[in-house]
Length: 250
Image (tube, rainbow, N blue to C red; front, side):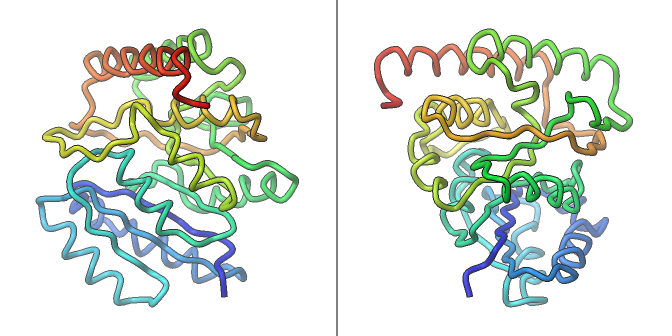
């Protein structure tokens, strides 16, 4: 039977997160649901033993699939997972579970009311941000304001890694990525602004997008360089606008 929900989780050197039981918590939640589901663990060429741990974990349930990808960054890794998914609804969420999977019930409520894309938001009234350093919050707010000015007015939080897509639109939407559409191998863990490009395209296509306040817990990471990464993301947003001007999103 075609799953009602596909959960796609990208990974890159997640051994520490696996050791604290995030996958067990995810599986426990899914098993408790009455609907059909599948869990797709899409690995981004991890080098710390993550892939072996994922393969072993997948033996716990036949509905778990592990994808072995080259290290190309978050966008191609999520894209591979979304294409492998078969669910009516397809969620991608961060491995560290900063937003707990049980928040999906909030998104599915709006999906069933006609939205084609439902995104978690840390900026809306009703959202909860736990233990986030003030300087990170300030930088995030500043980036979101720039995104609204330059690319996507009306969406308060494009970067929250908790987004739900209708299976009917997934393949076409992800295939339209241009700035983040390639699969060139990387040497760093830069995530980028691929969420911005996705939502920019979705807006151009007049897809129905709903933003929903969620619970979010800050997790420390040595992969993020706030200033450097923000500048690179700003560059990419400008490139997205240029791509649009020359007709790449038609």
